[in-house]
Image (tube, rainbow, N blue to C red):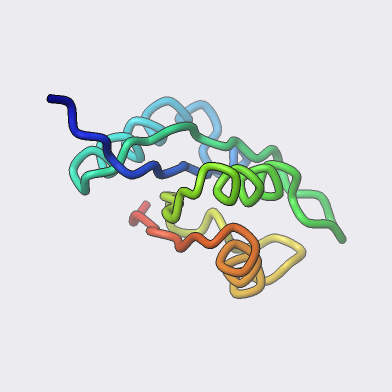
Length: 106
């Protein structure tokens, strides 16, 4: 019988990974599998724009809520350096998406 694993979503910023996005996504997938999650999708953020919440992040929050997925996997630093502080992004994800973040070292 196939075991149903809890869903997790990935989040990467393309401005931080450049041409290395495939290997970064593979790292997220490997981490998910090793920790008992099914990586449903990876949300890819373009360079974040000033003075607004990043669009892929908004989509991620909505999808976590819709799918009742409680885990987001990202690389260290991918939730930092944007207009909105990292702690605020984590609060939005927790409050509106009911999810927490696992950050992998770069």
